Structure formats: C-alpha cells, structure tokens
Image 1 (cartoon, helix red, strand yellow):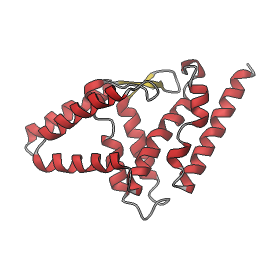
Image 2 (tube, one colour; image 1 turned 180 degrees about the vertical axis):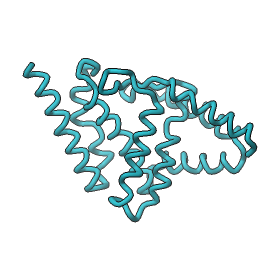
Image 3 (cartoon, one colour; image 1 turned 90 degrees about the vertical axis):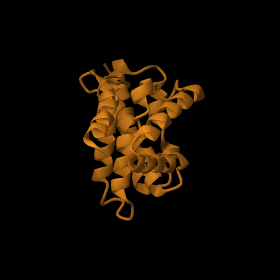
Image 4 (cartoon, one colour; image 1 turned 45 degrees about the vertical axis):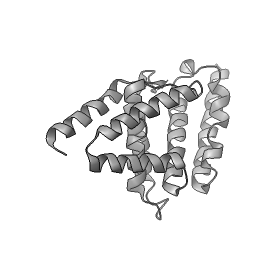
Length: 189
C-alpha cells in the first residue's frame, strides 16, 4: 500500500470519531464509536494473562475494526437495529474492504469472516467484549440517559455471550452487581 492509500483508509476510519453512539460517558457526553472501539481494544489487551492460549493481538484487531461499517451508516443501537440495517451496513463495509489494497483487504476480510462465524475462541472473546463494554459504559453513564428498556437489558444482556468462559461470566456478574447497585442508589434519592 502506498502512502496515499494509507491516508485514505485513515480518513474513512476517522469518521468513527464523529459517529455518536447510543451511550454517554460518565459526565453525560455522547460517546463516539471510536471511543467504544478503543476501550474494547484496551479490554482485550488487558486480558492477555487471563487468556494465555489465545491470540490476543488478533482479538485487539477484531475490536479495532468491528464497527468500521458504522463509518457508512452511523450507530444503530442493538435493540432497534433491524436485519435490513445490518444488511446495508455489511454491504457498504464489504464494498469498502474490497476497495482496499489486496493484501490488506484479504487480512481484514478474513478477520470479519472469523468474527461473523463465531467459531474461534478469539471471535467469541471479541463479541463478549463488545457487549460487556456497552454494559460497563451504561453503568458509568447517568441513569437519566438510559432508555426505559435498558433497566432490564442491563440486567440480562450478554450472559449467553460470555457463557463459554468462566472468567468472562464472572466479569458479567460483577457488571450486574454494579447495575443493580446503580439502580437501587437512584431509587433511594
């Protein structure tokens, strides 16, 4: 890839900095998709010793690219995203990935194939971190920013996704403890 191709890829990816997510930060500022992807990547990197048999560099790469399709469609919360929305995002992302330099295109397409198949431990960890990061962020954001359905969703979401791993299941339980405590504290006000 030449320098111009590299810059063009970065220009597309930069859109995620300006793509708002449904979640807010602790101070109530709307979070960007880039911030979500960054923290997922950090989460994966910090788990290297918990999952020593996994290729955590691959998991970090999955976390970094997982929402690139939102450069083209924006973020649609999982509880309102339709199959048509997913198909549009996937088609636009696929078109962009195919336009990349051949070697890079092949690498990224292979990662997306593995992520979508959800057969490898690396793909399962990435998917779990995607969901867990959103739950953690909700627990950090003010309850006033939650939609009505998120009170129950934060209690039930992602348990099935983490069930393959005792460690991630424990993390999910700790997140649930934080959710319950946050809701109870608000109800006491």
